[in-house]
Length: 263
Image 1 (tube, rainbow, N blue to C red):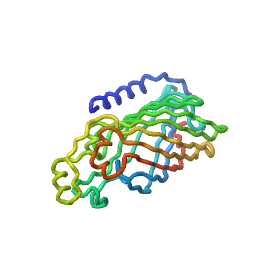
Image 2: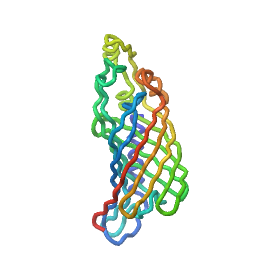
Image 3: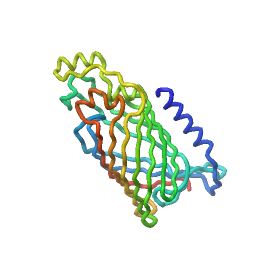
Image 4: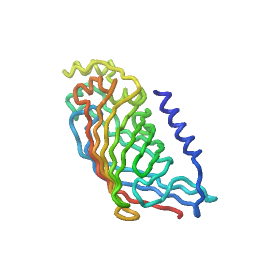
């Protein structure tokens, strides 16, 4: 997987560059930024939850000099089409001092993942793939695949429901699900007794997401979702998960604002 995910990133980038260009009138950039709140597990594999801030970024349209571009600046939520999108994820820090069940484990720094995705949307279906790199924090690769059935209510409201699958390379899985021999020894002294465990790359979780997109007008919007994911393979077998739970639930609510430059 350490080779597969970077290769996947290169394929996505190549496809994005190779997408057919459409003639546009003026150069410019349109994107959505969002800020909100979420309820998520304290750390991957945890059974406890925390409320915290969250955000989103959505690429809409890029028009280059000469009138060629990608995407669409339509104000409809989940606009049909095929093209690239930005991908980012923030993962909170994990400290054993905050979680007695992890006594003996080293702290895990907060991570920021940035990447690229491709999405295909019709009136009633959506499919996407994305890959991200931990530019801050874990320094590994992670990726997601997903598909949705879409219900539209007028031009402003969209509901979606569909499966999700998450992947990670060895560096990612070792960061969040691994226990080194030194950590296992420290855990034994602390009384938690976590066995040494070196997870492999591959499938991390599968699940479902139910979500809502609503546009208040041409600039503002609201996004919300409820998700359930079940850890798989080595992520499920980790001693860290054994102290917590395989089932990982999440809720998020985000207010979005569209920005346009140069158009």
